[in-house]
Length: 89
Image (cartoon, rainbow, N blue to C red; front, side, top):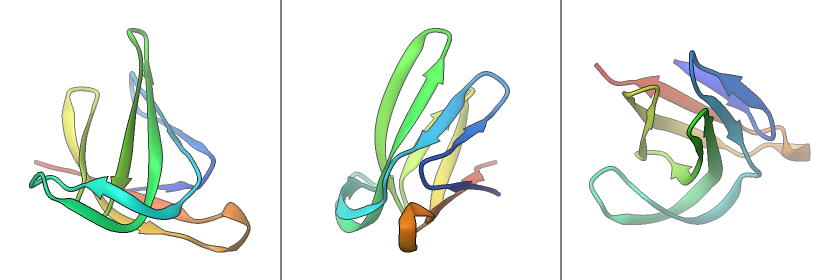
């Protein structure tokens, strides 16, 4: 699992993942349903450009051609919340 602090960047082998500010908002879960809860914009930067996904618990995203699940989005004071990602097998 990877934990990324709010407003910071984690670098995978070919992709930088930046986490924006966590708010209560709508986001799309992996099953296609719309949920409301703590979520953050996740900015994916590669050599081919950038993509933005709003991720909350249960969302999936692709990083370096691998599927990842957002396990937890936890707001904390002073914009120091966290997003926890788990690589799917």
